[in-house]
Each structure stands twice: as C-alpha cells, then as structure tokens.
Image 1 (cartoon, helix red, strand yellow):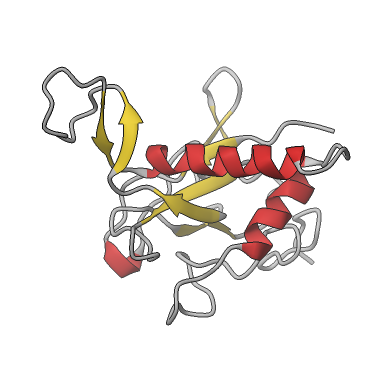
Image 2 (cartoon, one colour; image 1 turned 90 degrees about the horizontal axis):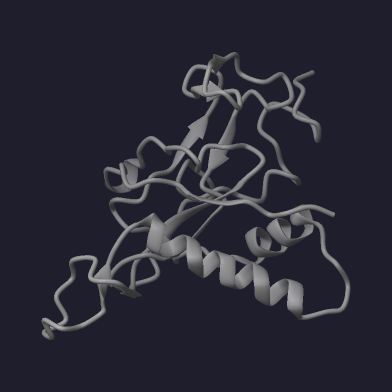
Length: 178
C-alpha cells in the first residue's frame, strides 16, 4: 500500500504570520508536521505557508532544479498537522540544560522534535487494527481528527481546514486545475 513519509515543516515562522515551509515539509505527497506549544497553540517559530508554483523550488533525484510538477495542485497548505515541539525532552545533549552535566538527554524545540510525535501517532493508528491502511487513509485520519486551538481562524496557512485529499485549493483530487 505504501509508506507514509513524514517531514518537518521548518522553523522559519514569524508568529501568527507563519513563514516559509522548508524541505522536506513542502513535499506535496509527504505528511508535513509543524510544532505546537504546551498551551496547545502553534509555536511562534513553526513554519506554515501556502505552497504554489511561485513559492516552491523542486528538484529531481539528482538534485537538479525542475519545473513545478503538473500533478501538484496550483496551491496547497503545509504543514498538514502540528504536534508538540517546544521544550521536548529528547535523547542526546541537544542544548536545553536539565541541570545534570552528565545527562544523555536534554530539552530541545523545533519541528524536528514534533515529527516523531506524528510518526508515533501513525504507528498507533496502523497498529489499532489488523487492516493495512494506506498512507492517505492514515493522513486523513490524523488531519481530520486534529484539534484546532480555540479562537483559531477557520483556515489559513497555519491552520489548514482539512487534509489535502478531501479539499484541494484550486484543483481536483489528482491536483489538476479545471
């Protein structure tokens, strides 16, 4: 059925305005993850944007710049979801002092701290049943059941309405504009 590819959205956000989503978070076929904070809001550093032909830089397997793929919709929102990414306790001395100089773990923040939470949710969804779910079904389940913070706008580049397989801006299911 396939593999669900999860990518961090990037840490170039500038508060409520969002910010450029970076690779691999801009990949249309991947599941992009932003960072949320302990107050259940979007972390100020978490990237989020509308991706389109004028804002995306695409590469082939040999890292040569290529045209925006015809199979992509003219515009789509990234990230797909957000997960805890502020002051996450993680293996390795990443920088956040925990008061023990010999510690092999520390606190760190970023969308790279949030992506493992989403990967764990994917594993839980897949293991909850004996059915082998498609990547699209798992993406939809996570995106459609994600809770938006109270007072969040109905939709914008930081809070997509629904997963891209159900509602595509300016395009149909296969991403072609009509």
